[in-house]
Length: 256
Ligand code: NAD
View 1 (cartoon, rainbow, N blue to C red):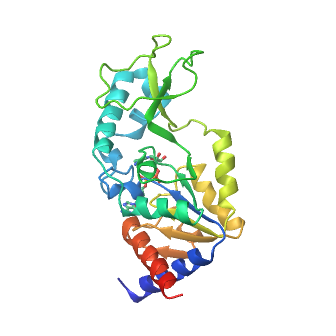
View 2 (tube, rainbow, N blue to C red):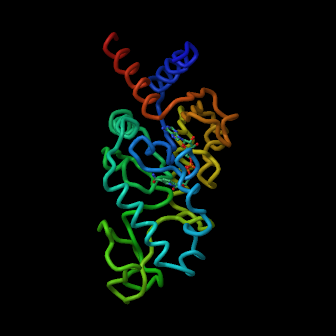
View 3 (cartoon, helix red, strand yellow):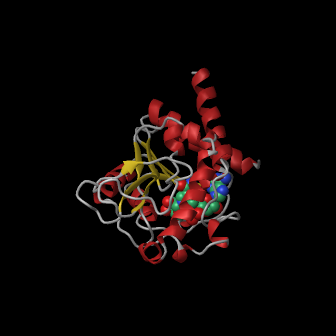
């Protein structure tokens, strides 16, 4: 680690310690150390499969079985994954520092690490809902079978297809969740962790935070679409950066 990394870690730790409100926006990079592939990193899923062919309404309409096979594969990967240090540190901050987590991830690893105050902007890979939006199947429900069985799975109410309860490209976000996320972006310290910041409206929370006067911290080994907005940048993995920030917080508390 360079001297400037050490300096940045100390500055982030001091800001977190002094903050009245902390919000973290997380993306797929937070789960990559758990073995869950990102969409755009080195191990990006899209190197093997193009997004347009799978994560859209049109793809599902054209070939629901193929889309479900892909989700079934992702669910089996995630089922075998464990939350890593980044999930654990962020979850601890939600419990002990009142931090809010806004995640674009659908994998459920923040929840498994015990996160509270979590806004799941893009849904959950473990939930499904009726494709026809039949009356009884309007709300989503948990279906965490791995493998799912016959594909595409069927709605228990109307017998039609069910779809994963995630936000696909081109679909709108739940407005009430987006409102809550925007309200949380107005905070003292806003961390953007493991996201390429190219998927909107989630990436728009970073300029929102900046405009509200937050100290913006980017944690990502690579530059992103919003790197120029960061007040402090940590070019390292989420697990390393958050572990080190947390160690500083714990040791400075011990010497108080
Ligand atoms: P993305 O794939 O576009 O970008 C991942 C980012 O993580 C990159 O900027 C990469 O440099 C960074 N990264 C890689 N390893 C890292 C590490 N160890 N520590 C910190 N950063 C690291 O992901 P995105 O920005 O979240 O947007 C893609 C969309 O894909 C989201 O909507 C999300 O719902 C979905 N997605 C979710 C999962 C998941 O739930 N785990 C996985 C893939 C994609």
